[in-house]
Length: 345
Image (cartoon, rainbow, N blue to C red; front, side):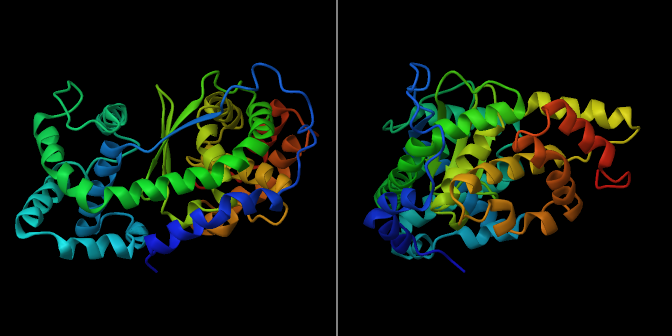
């Protein structure tokens, strides 16, 4: 089903931000006096013109190419597709040329895994709402030219609606972060045995992110999240933010898993660390919002994204750690010992 952007923006702006916090419970530590450290913002939200244009063109090119993640094509808002019919012949020619460039040169590169795409993303995030892009060592001159030519068309026909949706999404999730964010940072830091980043994590909100609807790049740590993706709305927005932020905390746990599995002469399943992230963020958000169904359960990741083995072992060996019954080291050792020898790797 295609998402109507107009309906989504209307829903978010008609008071969703005020409705959602009441569905969640106050955390036991909510009444504690905040230290000077805890008063620092957790996230720094942005809705930038150039990064939104970049992702929109990437998504449009992937849609034409029918790439490796067909489900993402359902994320194209019906309103956005309809706008193309209103372009003048000259605008259509320029827009088609931009999509063709992305199709030929960029969609073969993953937005998350490719270093060049990460550099492009960071550069465009820094450009914010500049009138035009200037030369950069991190971007091909041809790409800069394509974006500069496409920019007036995007600004005239799509940007105002995308920016409005981005800000509506920020307005809806910000009260949840304000109410529950500090407790979640403490819980996640303790769970992964890694301090929360000292500086606010940059979050670039875009109409379209990647096939997953959100991703995080490191060094520097930055989150990109879609405001239109149906999977990222309401309380799920809180989980997806803290799931993505947890990517900055998982390195030591991932290394320990590899060592513990090796000690049992096993190979750690490739996606176990990521399943662990989903399980952990979902668990903690469910604790404060009892009616909330965690992302992995709601989107059937255990059966079609990971493996039912992942969930079974995480419930048995990792959840006791989240409940404070088992140390981090003991929980990881148990995961390695109990995971089936012929599990997915």
